[in-house]
Image (cartoon, rainbow, N blue to C red; front, side, top):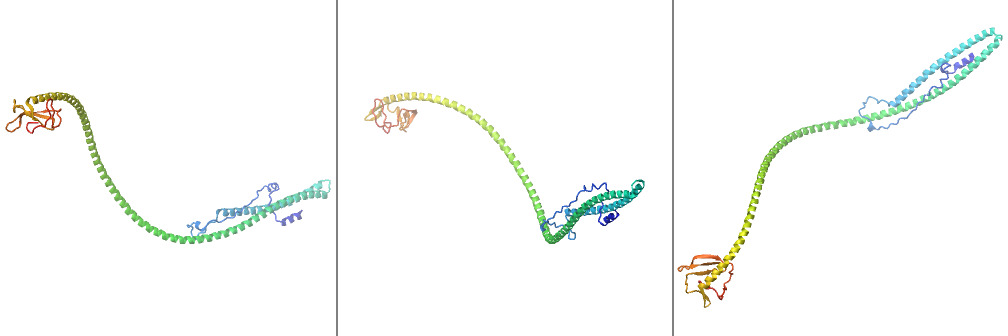
Length: 380
């Protein structure tokens, strides 16, 4: 028994906890670490220009966190491994003590038992060996499980180290890229400084132009205000004139209304006058016809009495010489009747009478008298 324990000491042992908690070791979670390769997609144009030259850019947070977590897990496993080894040693010492105590107890029990002490010792030693063998089997299984876990962790650590080296190399390459980008950025910054100085100069010129423009705008605003005032004055004058004109138009409209009323009255009066004139003209026509008939009859009567037809001429009758004479105006409707003056030959006490029935002709035909041309003096 002691030799087997000494042989176990040479083997690498791991702490397994107390015998009561051995069943709970298999329930411990397995730690697995997934490694993801990081692809650099940034170009030199996308690198920021505000990175200082001396400072190195910090690594990506995902990889650093994964490395720190892996280191923490490795330290945890190492610490637990040490605890397991210490507990294994304490267990072996306790087993050794228990074996001694069992031997002493078997010796004591053999003294009081009927069996010989050798038989009792053999029985107790067999039981102890069986128990110890069962424990050793359990411990071996647990040790194998822990060794497999440790091997897995070693592979994980190796992969992490390899990945860390690869990441460090990538980090160095990125640093070089950043340095080159910074150099390019410095050159571009110098060019930009020159551009900024030029832009400042242009800005100053533009500001001066702006000031002149603002002053000109103010002058224009003052001119616009003056123009507005002038236009307002003109508009007010025009409005006054329009008001006067409207008043005049209103007065003219009133006058037109009055004149229209007067014209209406005059039209009515004219209509009345026209009616009266028509009636009077009709009466005058009737009276004229009557007068014409009477005068014509009187003329014929006097003509027959005062004149006679002799040798183709009308000659005044001898019974009444130069007392009364008749002159007919040729080519007219009017006749003049009167006595001529002996010295001048003009008519005295003459009367003009309209003869509408007498036509314009050199020859006049009377009843009972033949037609003949009139004589140049008091003759036909």
